Length: 140
Image 1 (cartoon, helix red, strand yellow):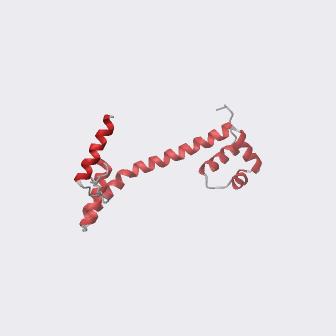
Image 2: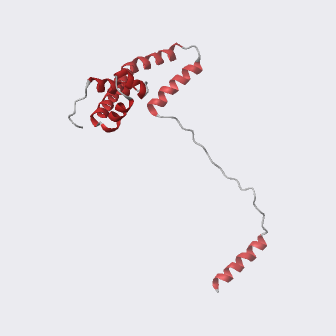
Image 3: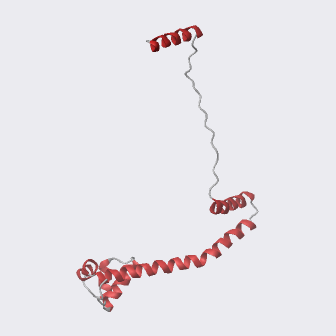
């Protein structure tokens, strides 16, 4: 990253671009530059795009911090709902959810069996004759 300083117009554009909810033409109008100037910053100014990426990371980290702060409340609220329900199937489903999240999904054993439907009954005399013929061929 270069040591190039961004002006206020570029910083404002970087923030709007990082948010990602406004199209580039409106960003250019909002900060008072042409659409081409904004495209030049995006495509040719490494410091500008580094600022955009930095702002995006900051937004993402902020969102994650909010989610993590709410996680304990969400888990406790879910647990309370399981305990307060009068429906045993709902409670069962809630407990299964917690167990599976903690220990992994329970799997069923599946027993496989094969059946041969196209068996042919062979006469023992025919079988012995073929076996004798086979032995004779292998001795030669």
